[in-house]
Length: 171
Image (cartoon, rainbow, N blue to C red; front, side, top):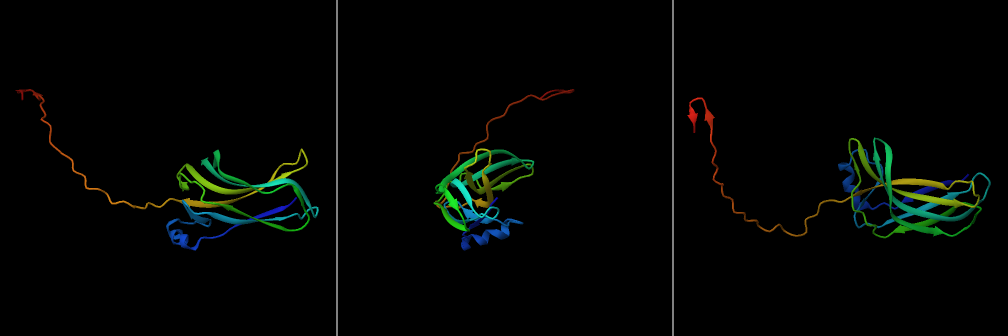
């Protein structure tokens, strides 16, 4: 067994959005920000880890009432070819301006979250992949770059005709 630790380089200018997101412990990224980070792999159980490669993914997860209903890959990269780790190893990754179409949100029953997932593919056929995830938050703040042109609408009241039938007659 091994321990995987993921750390992400913080973007200080995005801290101004933290007060707007209650209880947000994750790092905040805006659309167009690059994500840089570090993966530390510690082969603690047997002192070494033989693997077929290491992949880092940026994924989005839709969850409905805390059950993952859909998962999609935004960006994926291999950060290490096959080999053996005999000591603590640090690997870096960069997602250069990943294309985020929808911001993170948490609704009453539905949520969309983004995660950085590290997967270590093992050699043994029956051994599962070793993986670890780290949640990040994407926000797409509204930014008005072009002024709104003046809008002129011609508003006229259409003529309305109707009959009202009462006990005393038709009006």
